[in-house]
Image 1: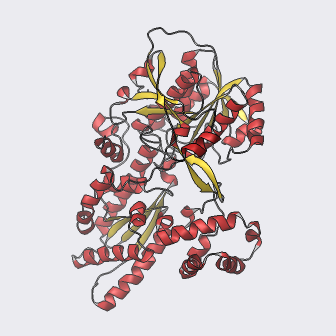
Image 2: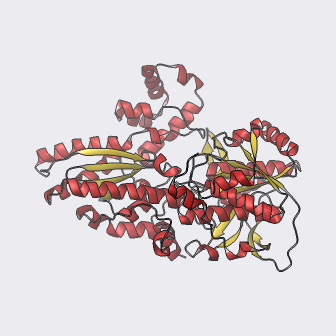
Image 3: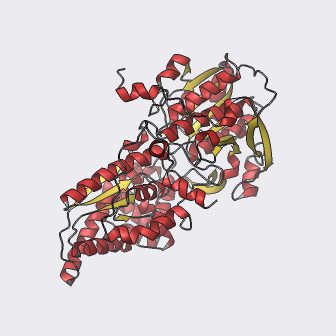
Length: 548
């Protein structure tokens, strides 16, 4: 494969490990942990891996040569920048423990484990993928590891290859699977450790002990560059309103971070919409009012950032979607019905209030709510063109306002959805360092013989050499949630905190940004140059550390 000049130069970049991990380490145990909620239920479900202590790595003054160990690795879910560096760090870490250690990659996600589809990852392969974007070294997939038959089938190939540890790189759902797998293998004394790594560009896999998921830094910088470019065009042409939908089904972290970086005229935060019990029309009216105020000042242009999952956060819509998820999970016959029959079926079987909301929606949007579910049984909100829905409704509201004599401008909308553009970008210096250290740290956890832990690095606003390394029990992050119509233990998603510094910094400025043209143009990710340009973490992470 021909490499670009940047790829060639980037291959030579050496990620900077925390000082603690540059030599032999020892684990220091903290106090026993408990889940964030539903402690008794989760303790019963995870009797062998619940209540484990946090681990912190320190320099080991009495190092010993470790035994060779065979390790398996899985990439799961959507891609996130830096995944290759997690694998590179893991490879280097187990080789540091013993040069005869071996790493096996299961192909195309968790399904590769079940189907016994794998390759051995050797030094020449690993070296081709250092500091590159994407997940193409072994591919990714969305097979859920939930059933005993899958666990047993996977164990067959793990035993055949003498694999003693499995690293699952994924978001909240796949790290939940990692915890379930760790519990099962521990309960049958399979002799296989399971370690998780926090991945998701959505930024919703974080908490008091996991400061950031990898890929969020790079993806939001890519999106912010694109938004900045659009805003420069918008400011130049002065005739379009750009409605920009951004990834983030379950939380608005991406939209908030991009707003902090680019200062758009409007950014909707789903969590605020839900907290204020706003209707879809409330959201539309607020946008239309800003359009009218800017038009009065002669500015018939602007930018609107919209989180992908907005529809699910509007209380009436959230109630409708939750009932639809349960209804369709229990109605396999639904797929065989014609479109008119499906609509009639839904209206007939929903509660009165939710049926009324469903009927009030434009037919195309209503149909999108009943399309195929994702592997977790949820509506695929990325298929709902929220940006077009909002701009059309804003246009209608502006026509009403014109008749009322409170708007006299021109409104022309353009639409964008930024998602895949950021998922496989070459990782920023932050993500290159963070991911490599996560993988290397996972090797240290494996060497300690623990299972059911997530690789953890803290102090992330400091230079990477000062990061604090260790491990966090995955069950510590659990609560019970309804999935596929049943209550199941899952990692609690992190939503935007309306009392947190990132949101409060945004809220303090948004009225100013709405009426003035205060755009910031971040430009592309910089890989070479001064640290203040190349190595800065996200504004979200910076502001969150001000709270600590």
